[in-house]
Image (tube, rainbow, N blue to C red; front, side, top):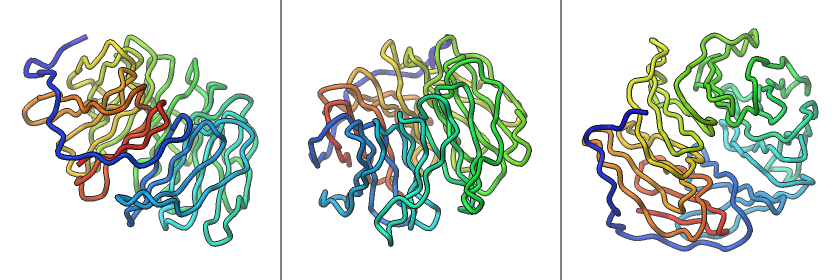
Length: 302
């Protein structure tokens, strides 16, 4: 594992943070495509929609029979997809205020879900070692993507494309063609279970994190690792680019949010949670960062 030569671990000076709510274990956060609204998915089997920075609850969704693992807004912001330990994926319509579709087909817990930019397809990643693409109009599974040798932990569509990115406990990342369901490329390099991976806005770089807190940056075209950052030894649960692509944030099991300035290589730590940080998301202008943790708190950082 390579260490970035310019990385220094420091405690960042926090301008402000707002304590929004205390509930159960937060598993996932999703940002509305246009508004200052965030959805949280938690192990109490509920999802909640919040306005920020005031923290008002707008809506609550109930229907899953086990913990929620993931959530993602429809590109229009009018619907939501959720994934759960109950092996299902559900589609929710905000105008109707209810679940309008339950997608069944995975044999084990579903870890993550993602909505295609056109709004007609949803992808899901499961502990059963497969990923699926669902056609929302026909309400059927379009294809099942097989190839990972262990749990598929995250899934994401590259915006405005037919490319899907997955990360797996088999220590690899894969790119898939959503039209055929075939694996196009596999990225090797992690020494431990890969917990999450995501594209930058340009789609030419991927960042991933593993169960030992190592972040890796990958060149999509060359299918090669560019640099490794050791932010461990605690697991990294999720990693995200800010909208500019110049900052990366990591949700860490040590209870901190780690931010990496790509130009300077400075690795900082935001301290505020009392337990593992599970999910993070930047707002559209990168003025705020939201983090949800196992301590049941949703924090807003600025």
